[in-house]
Length: 193
Length: 152
Image (cartoon, rainbow over all chains, first blue to last red):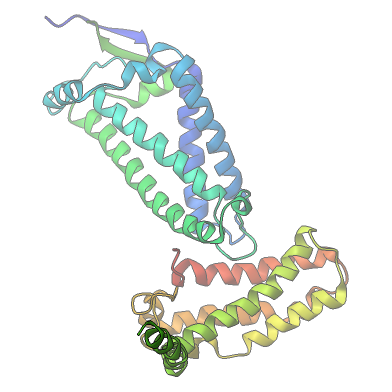
């Protein structure tokens, strides 16, 4: 038996602020990295903000409200397969939080961004103007390789963000469920167990 | 017997390095690395002063900038000969893209030449003048590294 659907307060204000700030600063950092001025001071600052935001999300994942906690939304292969079976049904999921598949996306996004911050901090592109602040703590070979990893990371982030937006659109137009509004207002239609 | 092997191995060492010396690709790559090393030494002097790690000295700054300017008058792209890309040679960091768009690669090097042209004078007159010159030079480094330098 499926329970009734009702609107609940799902995403807390700090989590919503985190989401939109992260979106803004990741896009800004990405754009500045690709098209910005040769002296990448602003890109660096965007990176530091992203690092701070990731730190907040890590803490929130353990001590925040239930929907924000990793233990609440990270599920095993069984739950993921179960969710996937209903994924293409033309009806809203009414899921109370990150669904088991979305959880994978959350983890991938956080992991890639953490790696991106790390490789950025230790990068030295040998141009004497954009040296990562921690580059002097690693070997010369690592400093140089980090630039390559950082470029690869930028591609991975682009793919993850495009996938994220594509899935949001899929929910909006195929499953007829708006996932953007809950991330703005905090309120979402969910089905009770 | 062992002595003979040792002697033969030792005798082969100069032969091996001789073969290296005569290989135009190996020579070109070594020359390129030497060129960048000279650039790096002088850029290091300037960026050290720009960051305040090294005390500003007008003569030293201007000499470093003049060295860079002199280096940019060498025809560096002529050292990027066939067979010396990262796809062909192990110790090369030169992306094959250099050979698919040699004009753009030459334009990037010209960018460094232009950035270096007034550097010897620009860095005179105080530590605060070094930073902008380093930014100009570094921007030219970056423009080329972004597209044409292997990152590993």
